[in-house]
Image 1 (cartoon, rainbow, N blue to C red):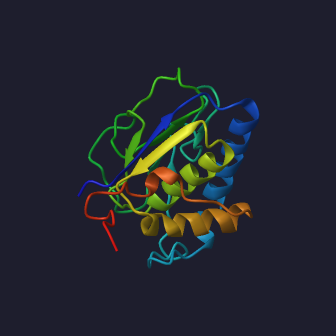
Image 2: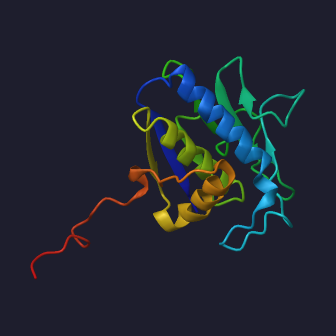
Length: 178
């Protein structure tokens, strides 16, 4: 089943915004094992293990040379059947609109355990720079709620689910008349 989050840079992150986004992402990564997700995934019992793109330091999710945050779920039992660097499951957030995108500004998590980290990172980045990032998702706000709670708890500030996650009204959902 396809389940993806799409995001597009509308402008570059400023230096201060990017520093905050990186700080938030690293804090989220460091605290992945501290919470239980209300949807039932016990992150203490079944930790989410992230892997970056560095062969020398796979635990690093921030690539300072390329100015991007990049990771994939490397938890036991998670297999994508693709080679490193070209996998549909990679999450890549670039600082600049001029950065080459590895994966077209989307991350198909297929609801794998690291979805909570993808959504939490996007929520935190959107909070830091809402004009820099547009976000849409196959998920609904209820699907993002565990990531929102995790990010708020970890980062110690109230955060909103990005507006683009809310489904657009359709003729069925538009109320007509009294």
